[in-house]
Length: 164
Ligand code: RP5
Image (cartoon, helix red, strand yellow):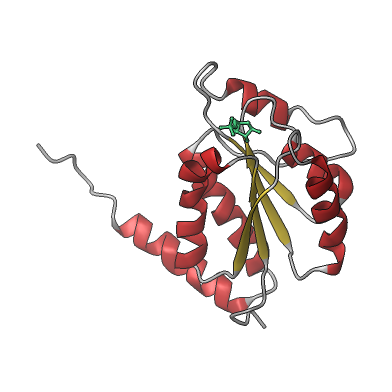
């Protein structure tokens, strides 16, 4: 079912400048062999693009959205408000407030519009992709298998003692 051209994850970001963080998401999606699309959509600079993307999600193949944004980071929350499809928020680290601004903008949603939010920066980007894999693993056995292999390799890579 998870065919090559069957896009399961939409990876969206507020700016080109977010890509250096969200490329870590892409790495995991590739490793676990999940088809995805990537788009730049700014809640503030391209609000109509945001609206049309989020409203069209229901007619698309996308089953999970990963949305990263920084600063006054309204992108993930606005997408979540416009679709019932799960949206995972990744707060981008910022120069002025180290991403605390992004984190609070994304995580502090009002009750009724959930927006599962990951850690600031690279760890959040990696974990967003792994969370998407986890959600999709419930339906796609091949993704479950790849996710279990990833986790097992990670476990084996941890040494018992620190090296000098
Ligand atoms: C947000 O503004 C983006 O998500 C980005 O993190 C931040 C800064 O954008 P640029 O000024 O670098 O384009 O919308």
